Length: 357
Length: 260
Image (cartoon, rainbow over the protein chains, first blue to last red):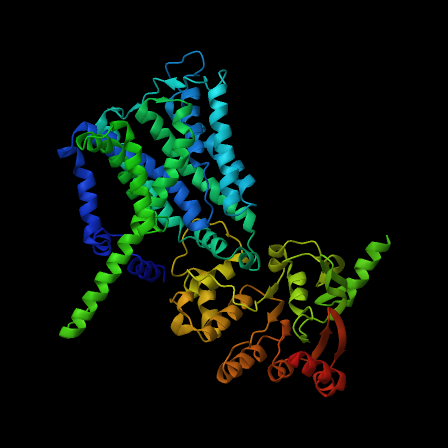
């Protein structure tokens, strides 16, 4: 019996490589191969300043995508949660500001920093969840502003205007994770885990119920769900993602200051999530890549066509406007529409030729 | 001491649902005025009345969509007047909505699965349900029970209107319901679908009582044992279906309401 059951189960959920190979789209395999071999052909600058940065911003924007896309809650506090995690890493761990930093080893400082950031994100969520729409945005924006001014004015803990520098990535397993290629793989690996976690949780009872709360909170209560508790739990999960992104961000920059989580960055995270698309967890990463490429090369483009380089944000803004104008659901929405049109054409062609699917 | 005695006495009456002097004001408007109603476990009851008689407001007060301004509501002896909606649902109360409130972006099966999950443990579980998941199996059986087997994996937004009404009923039947409130389940259904609805209602297990709000007398009077007639937020008349059907005042009110 037991043997039979095990065999039956094994046949139902095969976890073999061949199974996954069949299940994933060839384009997905190409993307995985490409990302694995980026360091083989790209310069260290591109690895670190484009890809790693895009992965990290993608993780922070992913936390917003989770709340907004699955929960219908636009939270502007996610960058502050990431910022707090980064600050806590610098304060608890090591930095050049030895008067304040406690010098804990990274494997203790990082988890505790993440925990503190989750508590902060959850409390912010608890304040915000009883409101809807524009009011959620206003409350979370207020918390984000308060956090920014607090870090800038508090010298005892947050070291005020200057913040912390010299927050180096750890040397672990004999690898210096501060090296651009090592850091590329670190951020790629963690971004992939975060992506898979969100994709998985979206189909779990918790994730399904969250989408139910988004579509119809009144009905969810009438099914026995505690809508408020569910929304707060979503903030906690999103805070975990944002905090992980915050840790990586401070390691990448080796410093953190109030400007790292000022209002411009709060808005940038929103722009990244919206431009990429809030429909699926890949959206924020697409948005982050577009944002990073634009913010690095817009300057060169502007200079090349004879405009002042410092206007590069104008180009980002225009790009944002164009995408939102043509596709309110971001790049993902453009892609979905293009693909469904292409599929329809393909099926009508096949039908005409009497072919099969 | 007296309140304890009162609580015990009301428990000993053993009513599934007991409303005492329930009043609901919206500003100066009295939507429900001093409604008192007792329903035995397993009893099937219809609430009739013209538009604005307070029928849906009555449902909203019972399920906790909003609280009554005054009065008490007991569910199987327990005072649930101030309970939030989800706590009432977890005690076995269910309702359907007049305008379908479904999760349009989710499949039929996922809708029913959520309903099953809502009244069981693991609401916050982050582990995906497997194919042999008990609740998934229960949800699948419920989909069959309301004749939606062929549409199991379709999105709710793709369903026909009548199918959405059937799904509403599946959601209300999930978990272990003890009492269900049906808010105009037959509205907008074709004659065939109405027959199907009557079949579903009459084949419910005996211990499940319900209140049905229904404009269609043919449906309402065929599936209930007692009828309450409401008018302007008050209980106007109560009796057996045939008494209500033959009552001249009721006829007057109903025809008047329908014409006006």
